[in-house]
Image (cartoon, rainbow, N blue to C red):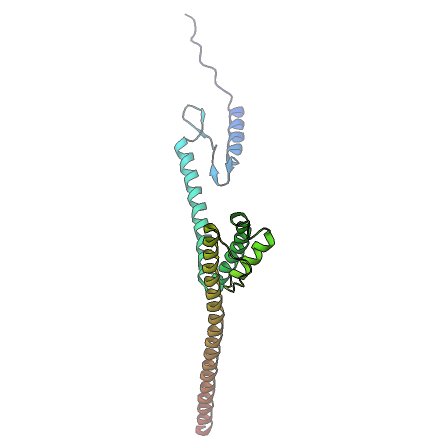
Length: 204
């Protein structure tokens, strides 16, 4: 009877070398914290990649981390803007941009009375602090709407700037009062220590 042929087995050494190489390469297949290609060996000896669900879960975790980092940055920006000084900086920046934009826009909507960009910017600058010399006056409906917005913005800008300056002086006064109270407390403590030291000296 013919002998049954046994299946040829793969040499162990080359297979082990290939496994080590694949594992080393798989360890480095990570892009920005998302594991995209780590291979695993199944029972049959074949190499498989992680499922799409695992990749989506990893990407979702990374997206959540980025979102939380962005939220922290926004919270810090809002905290800085809620202080009087931060609000003054924000209002000053917005007022500057709006003043320039209003001056440029006025030359478009009312070109008859604002023939040049210089005249539009001059009108915007004198309207923002609610001075209004009257040498340039808008006559169109759009121009008057822009003028109303610029005046309201100027009033808000002056109000916030005044509040920021006032709060700075008030905070400085409070710090000075607190420092004086602390100095007085230390002085009283020194006097008590001197009395205790004198009493101990007399008793000895």
